[in-house]
Image (tube, rainbow over all chains, first blue to last red; front, side):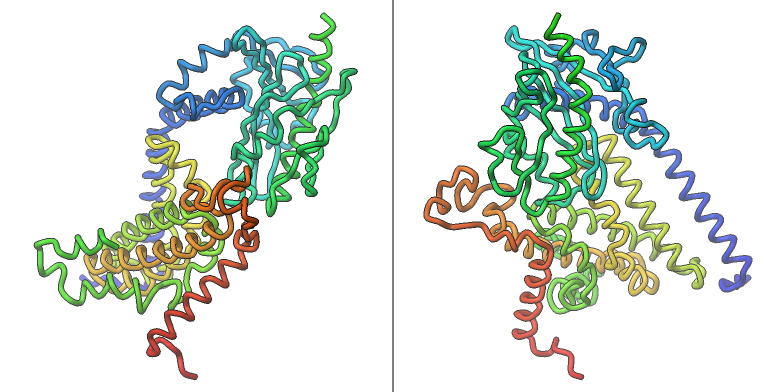
Length: 245
Length: 227
């Protein structure tokens, strides 16, 4: 029996079968792989937080030993979640807060978002790690910024992005860009937040609160500037309270 | 290239008849998907800033192209002609998503590198072009050969362009500094050499592809269209 491949019935039938088959394969696959993917994402989050404090590549920390190393340095029980005024929010687990999701959620304003703060101790000195999130040229960018014991000096950072242009905006992940942030102060001596500015003239290395941008990655660099200013400012009142304690 | 050459020497002769071998070798030279068919130019511009990106993208396209060509070829007598483009699109999109999901679960680091390219792979005109032009009309085995040829031809050109752009744009090759450290200013940079920032920008990729096309056509006059 010859099938008329040009008939409407066959065309519809083929389309329906194809969509059902492909759809179920994808659905099954997504469901089956979800636990593993979630686990990977969790380890990745821990590695991101750690890499703000230290050079994890040089220390040989990767996915296989990431969780154990994370527990060595960071006690999640000490982590707190702040609200937009810098007050501690009770009943929210810091590690479970997904700041990327909250940032994307249009129904949440800056006031409604949670601001996690991880506290670590390394060589007897406290370090505070502040996750940040913002948008670059093509998609979200994020990072973790490590503040030292004086509660104002940036001691390290790690940045990530979803799809910035390779070789241009994507360079925010590189150590040379992170090094430009190290040593900057998030507040003045008095405890007033000092806004960062990404500059093009190469003066970032010498001037305070100015950071050199990336050539060809202007919009991504500006995104990092906006992200740092918006997210870090929230923590300043809390840090001032800690200082006065 | 060397991998393909080894494959071609495998013992099962009939599979590698002259015609089948030509399917692999043609796209590498005289019928290159990028320089001759001028397909996949958009991704060639976007991701040839670094060699590593070119390798990852080339590998991903090769993989998707081989599987896609195989599936389309197996279904070629079943696909209704009026919706064949949509069917091809479903196949390539499903393949890319499956690959990405599996990588995310088992090789998360590779998946992170690839995430930028997922969209680029789906929209790559070479893939749809080979489905439509070859797999729809040929048996599975020649389709795979065709996919290998075109995939490697595409990857090879990406890497070639990326070598020029990374070397002169960033002074590195596959991430390793060649001319010395730019930021510390030693090596060649101490002598006053400066990276060419123009190389990093997309227009330079177009110019390099243009130069490659020019060189290729001046060496083989039969490729020059007459009109």
